[in-house]
Every structure is written in C-alpha cells, then in structure tokens.
Image (cartoon, rainbow, N blue to C red; front, side, top):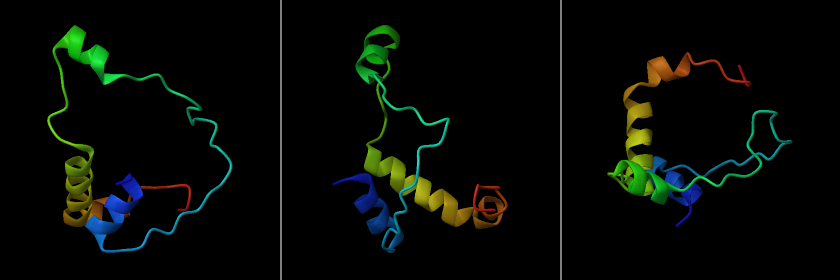
Length: 75
C-alpha cells in the first residue's frame, strides 16, 4: 500500500493531491540506503513506514494548535 493510501486510511480523508513544479530544494534523485547504516552503525528502523505515518497523524491531531501556527508556502 502506498503512503497516500495509508494517510487516507489513518486520517479518514481522501487525499487532495496538487502537482506543481519542483521546488529548488527538492532532491531529484537519491541513493539513500539504510542497509549501509545497518552495516556501519548496526542500526535498523524500529518501526514500519505504516507505523511511522500512523504516529505522525496522531501527533498532528494531538498538537493541532501548535501545528496550525507553522508557516507554509500557503500561509
């Protein structure tokens, strides 16, 4: 299941996707690989992407006041 569908499931809302030109800070490609971190640092993720997204949604719900004051490009 992709991240958009997971977020829709966790929020109970349908995603409203808007596509626009890339931001200058966007990274066009990445070769990030957590396997190297595992070898060098003996590190591995402690939760799945689904668990992390669920915790993120819950955090924003619990911190709506703070999160609503964060400036975005839409502000």
